[in-house]
Length: 300
Length: 225
Image (cartoon, rainbow over all chains, first blue to last red):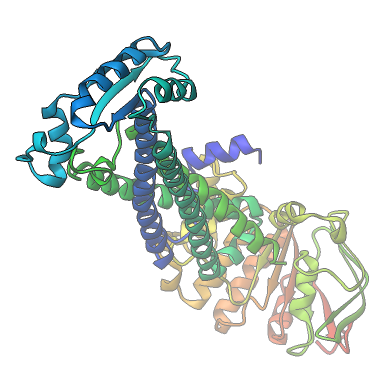
C-alpha cells in the first residue's frame, strides 16, 4: 500500500475495517489519558519557550538601543560635569539623544528600595544621563576615551555587561522549553508504543483470526494504527484545550509581575497550539505502526 | 494445487513428520486420520503455509512456500478455506460480520457479496442467527459459521481440522453433508479427524481417499476402515 493510500485510509477510514479491533479496553483509556496529559504539559512548555523568546527579544530591543552615563562628582561640580558630558554626547556620532534625568525621575528609580519620600537633595546621588542610540549605534570604547579626557567623573554603562547574561539566560530558558517539548514527544511515543503493544497482545485472537482469513500485515497494522492515532489526537485535543484555558486564565502580564505573568501566548503563538494534537497524532501514527509491524513480523 | 514433496517437519528437537509426499488433485476428497499427537494439525498447517517444512518442498498453487513473502501467504490463505476445531471469531462482531470478514480484508465487500452472505448463512442453517454474537452460538453453530467463513471467498481448497470434534453425531453428519456438497461443487476437501465413524459414514456419500499418519509417515489407509 502506498504512503498516500495509507494516509488517506487513516483519515477517511474504513467503517468495516475499523470494527475488527474491539472498541474498548484499558489501552484506549491509557492512550487518551497519556496523550491528553502530555499535550497539557506541551502547552506549558510551548508557552515557556515562546515567552522566553519574547523576553529575550524585548531585552535585546529595548536595552540595545539605550545606555546610561553616570556622573559621580562633588555637588559643586555636578552641573558643570553634566553639561560637559551632554556636550560630548551631542557631538558623538551614533547618539540620537541624551538627557539628564530629573530629580523626580531619579527619586522614582530609587523608590522601590528607599520609599517615595527619599530626601534626594541631601544625598550624594550620582547624576544619570539617559542615552538613546541611533540604529547604527556608537563606538562605546571611543566614547569612553573621550569622556575620560573631558569628563573624568563620568562612567558609561552601555548595558552590555548585564544584558548579555540576561539574553543568554532567556535563550537557555527557550532551549529548555523546546527540549521539554522534545522529551514530552518522546515520552508520548514511548507510552503509545507500550499501549499499542499491550493492545496487540490483548487482541492476539483478533490478529490470529485476521491472519487465518488472509489479512495482510498492513491491513492488521492499519486497523490498530488508525485506532491509536485517532485516540491520541482526541486526547491531545482535550489536553491542549485544557492547557490553553489554564494559560488564558493566568493573571495578565503586568509591570510588577515580571516574567511569570508574561507566560502565555500572543498573536500567532495561539495558532501554534493547533499543531499539538496534530503532532500527537503523527507521533502515535509512527509509534503504533512500528509496534504493530514488529509484533506482526514475529508471528509465523 | 497443494503439493508436498518428501517433506519432513521437526519441532522441539523431535521429528514429527518424515518423508511425506502428497498431491491434492482438484475436486478430490481426502480424510486424514491418525492418533492424537500424530501430527494431523501440523500436516494441515503445512498444507496452507502456516508452517514451513524443515526438509522437502511444499508448493501452494505452484509456488514454493519458502519463496513466498508475507503478502503471498495472505493471498494464498484467501484461496484455501480453513476450519479449525477451536474455531476462533471476533467476539465483538455479529456472526454476519465474522463470516464476511474475508471479504472485508480483501476489499471485496460489495453488495453482491452481501447477498451471497445471506445465501451462505442460510446454506449452513444460520440465516436466523446472523446478528448473534459468537459467544451466543452453540458448538455446532460455531463450526458451521467457521465453515461459512472458510468458503465465502469461494476457495479452491477447504481444509478442516477436527471439524466435528465438539459436536454431537447429528451435527457432525450435518457438517459432513455440507463438506460433501462443497466437494460436489468442485472444491478440494481435506478433513483431519480421529473419528473413524465419520469417515465410514462419508463413504456412503462421496468417494474419499483416506490417509493415515503413522510413525511420522503418511500412508494410504487400508480396508480396515
